[in-house]
Image (cartoon, rainbow over all chains, first blue to last red; front, side):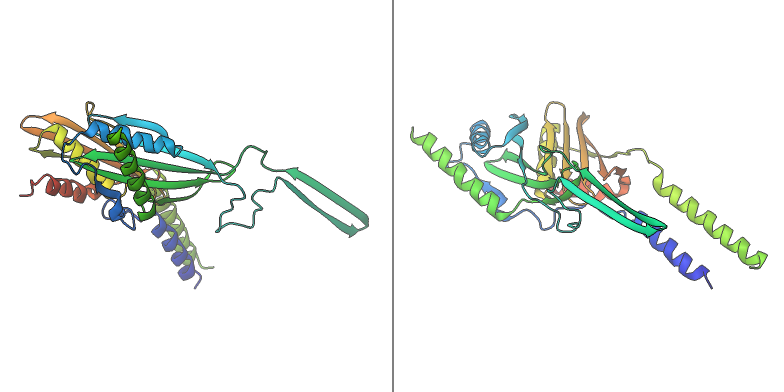
Length: 187
Length: 124
């Protein structure tokens, strides 16, 4: 019976289409506990100063602002950096980073023929980039951070993307933020 | 090959083709709505906080417009569009989501709306 393997293949192909989650997905792992911290121990509840201080920190780190809403206490920013020598660990047989490829072959039939071809791949200046996006929400005397990282290859195609609201980033942000507020409070 | 077997294979191929064409058809983006008794500003700010708590990065939000857009960097990429508007006796939340470029069926958004209800302390 040829029909059985055929129908199994079809079932598998269709199963790929049908993966609708039963609820809205969340980041896994969930954002670290350090990504939610109190901003004013004194309890004055000034959202605007929290927003301006966090903008100072983000800009010092090379982020560019994308959107803000001071009424809501929201800041959204992103930064890009070129990845030098980046290759996708799942697809590394393609020779990332090398701009020139050589191929050729020869055949012996009725006579001998040799052919060589070269190709200039991606031009210089089209480096793979990493885009890091961050959003901050100052609310009820607390600051909440969420962050993700996406990596694009030299053709501008998305290669990797993951949620990065991790302990390391949030802790560093909190430390720098506290330093900024304390120096501003002293002056 | 008997005519019977050939007929069976043809039917099977037709079914598969129909099934696959169902996958490719773009469905319209259908929002899901729920009414809350909290004022619009509070509902909106709570909704944005809930999305961030779940790891979504806010791409855009405006309290005056009552619109927000958030994305989650999990393959193939998820996006939520949120619209909160004033309603008599509270606020109306309308939310829709995309998975990659495909709209997510509205019933999938129900747990999220209920979670927002819990955040606002309005669970029945």
